[in-house]
Length: 196
Image (cartoon, rainbow, N blue to C red; front, side, top):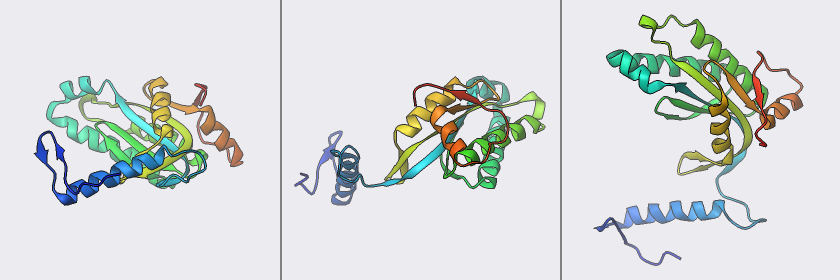
């Protein structure tokens, strides 16, 4: 399928090592969309994802100026603490957004509510309060080249986008997964029924 040891990108030659890495990534991506019945490489498991972002972060950056990095790092630390306390794993940071995965949906929901409470209780400097929205969704996740991928992330982002600042929005799939554990989740998150 990839017979050449070297190729080009943007008119520049690729070295043999870079070409091999590129073809390995392409092969792994091809495996993700393999026909039914063929095991997709990189499948981790069924998980519950928690995604967050700061609402109106551009405005916050403009008014915070040099204080913004502190606000961003403190926001991340508070969310990370809640995620760790409930057994979750951080997978990625993207700008002002976060992505964490949990084995149990009830733990994901509880961590999200705990994070929102910690963010609300934090004494932010000079009124520089990050208004954070969070979304929780359950589904299958893959790791390709160290990066998490899968529809659960795309759908989770859409669930998160439905949340208001300070709110945790939970998909029907995550709510059902939480009920199946037999442990009620802390707080009263909103349940979003977007068909996922």
